Image (cartoon, rainbow, N blue to C red):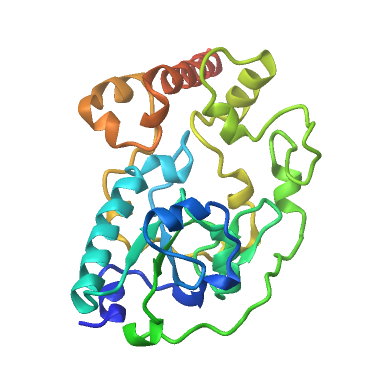
Length: 279
């Protein structure tokens, strides 16, 4: 089995190898910690996660199981596979908490471009992709991969749809904007301001926000994920009854890291809104 066969067996279609020197290093200590350096290579990878079951009051990534558990499992398998082929080589998979700017890395490897909302956008899956990379000291050619041609970082269509639709008006605004991104607000602990509560209630999102992604022209014809992990156990609407019924499964969900109190606060705001609308 080749590395391309490995990716195919996991339904990973978008990947690209580049010298690490093309990337923006953000956390060099993560390289040093794993015996890696700037002379290594990065195999950039995309994990599409948008499924056909459209969530009602959750962002798409929060309606499926926590992608970190998927990445952890995938990482172990990939690192083990490569180590078996190249015992002397070093291989480490990162995602989210990474040594590099992952959006930039995917751009310079030819996997996508940057939207005005700061997200990586791809032709096939729009921005509904998780990003990751395997950093190694083994030349990708030895792994059966050609190095991608150098690609300039480019932006999107700049159509303005995401900026116009953003509920808090934070896309393209100065850092002293009145309200943060709705997604960030839903993840805040403790009491929210009246404006923050009103934003959650008005938009009916109890965790995250996909508005800028949904209005993007590239989402119109975007395909759904072929990755089985993201097609199962989807929560389309999270109400209090469903939340309390999750039990131990709560810990497998993307919002679990903030604890029950934060997500329960948001659910209650949403349910109060539903009750008012029924009257």
